[in-house]
Amino acid sequence: MIRKNFITEINAFERIREASIRVTRPNASWTDHYTDLSKLAEDSGGDKVAVEIKAARGAALKKNAGIVKVIKEVVSDGEPYLDDATVKGTRQNETAETTVHAKKHIQHTKAIVEADDAGVPIVNDIRSKLSQFLSSIIG
Image (cartoon, rainbow, N blue to C red; front, side, top):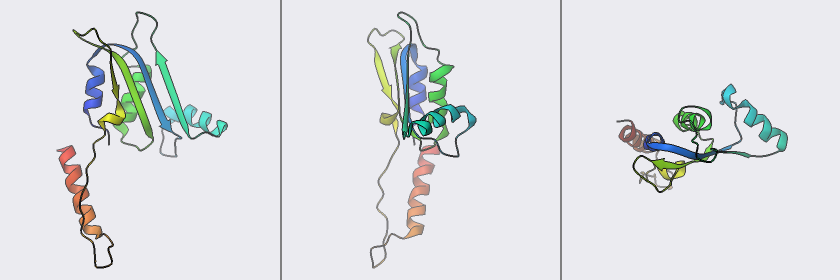
C-alpha cells in the first residue's frame, strides 16, 4: 500500500521535469483507462509496461493531467499492478532536482502471529493483526 504522502510530495513540486510509471500487465479489474497498455503488453508477450515522459527544455509537465494524473490515480487505486513510479522536479525555493519513488513510500509491517501445535498460523490471529495494521493506516 503506497502511503498518501507520495501524492503530497508530487504536489509539492513547483516544476515537474520527468515522470515515469511501470506497471505489471493489467488484469480484468483494470478500467478502460489502461486498456491500451494492457493490449500493448499482451500483443508483445510482455509482463510489465513502462511509460516515461519528459518535459521540453525549460518547460514542466502538468501536475493534474497526462502521466502525472495517471500516476496519482494508479497510486490511489491501491491495486497490486503498480510496479513503480517516479517523478522528478524541483520544489519551491529549491534549485536542486528531487526524485520521488512510489516504492519508497510503501507502508508495511511485520506481525508475529499465533500458530497451532503443527506450526500452522491461526487464521483469526492473522485477521486481527491485519485489521490492526489497516486501522493504523486509515485512522
